[in-house]
Every structure is written in structure tokens, then in C-alpha cells.
Length: 116
Image (cartoon, rainbow, N blue to C red; front, side, top):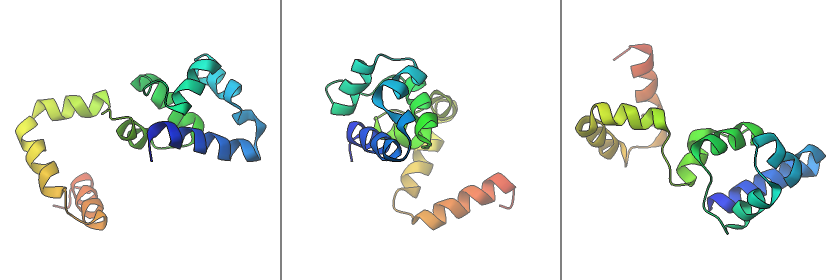
């Protein structure tokens, strides 16, 4: 699903249960004009900046890394990590490309917990 379609669908789902998720109110809370958010949701404009995507993610209770990826972006903190050791991270990501999700999660957990 495209970023625009996903954002609109998520906001509309939330709005069905809570009127605070109207286009105008969400736009106001993330600091953009309602017309701009509408154009983003329709796909007339490309995805907004990382900062606005982070605000949208928080507003819509979504993972910001997922929304950034859907927008074709990588967060600045991940970019810095990759730039520090580009060859190693490229090798790691390519090696993990076909790995099942549960194995990737297990590896991440082992690295985080120091059990490797």
C-alpha cells in the first residue's frame, strides 16, 4: 500500500471512532495546513519531511520507521549508523534480506541483550 493511501485509511479508521481525527484536527496537531495534508493523503504531493512523518506516526499510533520506509525514507539516526560502517551494514542487510522475520527478530534480540 502506498504511503498516501495508508495514511488516509489509518486516519479515517481512527476518525470513525473519534472525531478528533478529522483532517483539519490532525493537520493542526502536526503543524501543517489541512489542504497540504489532504494533498499528501490523495498522493498529489510526495510524503512530507521526516519530522512531519514522525509527528504523523505519533498522532496515528504507528511505527515511524515503517511510515518512513513507506515514504521511501530512512531516519537520520539510521543513516548515521549506516554511514559509520557502510560496507558492514550493507553486507548485514543483504544477508538478512531473505531471512524469516522470526530469525531477524531473534538476531536483533540476541545482539541487544548481549547473548551472542
